[in-house]
Length: 239
Image 1 (tube, rainbow, N blue to C red):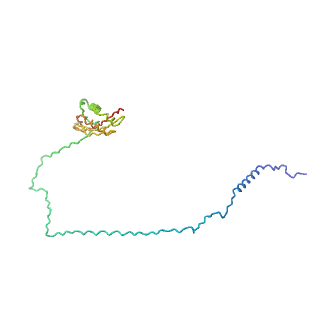
Image 2 (image 1 turned 90 degrees about the vertical axis):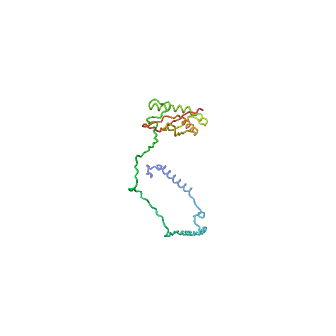
Image 3 (image 1 turned 180 degrees about the horizontal axis):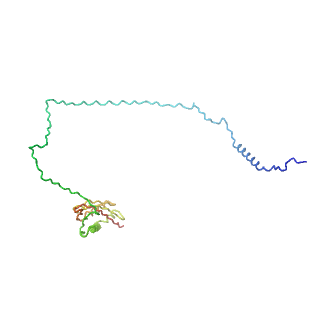
């Protein structure tokens, strides 16, 4: 008697696949059953609008303000008309002619003198042809006179300047004062300007520069000219 089953058939060949599909199906059904919810229809608020609860909005009454009309313009002042009588005599202005005739005496002008106005020319100290000469610096060429003048002014300021003034003012460290002055056509010191950390130092610098002696004025093309001069004053305040 022949067997009914196929000896080559293997029933447990796809058992793991079937098991995984069944397990996934059961997990899906379990999750759906857990998350399934029911709601009471009476507790649901569908958000219907009740028109009875809306109060009638009161609209405030506004009154239109009527602005008064502008006042009428003042009446124009009447023009004053002055009546001149015909009998009144009016003086007429007579303009005399300035043209010369045969009887006019002609005056001959012999010579007209033109007065020359001297211009106050300023020439920088660095480019002037003949520098101003400080007393004691008469010898040498132009460069030697410049060097001598610079040394003489520096020694003069160092001797006359009151350096203790900075300490009395409460200043400390290195102090610098810039002084500008002019040597005019007569050799006098004019136009002193100074800039310092304190107004008292500016006044002291101007006082010392005013004490400089009169110099021989500088010359440009043989004529005396004004020469500006710049002088820095630097000193250290001793603590």
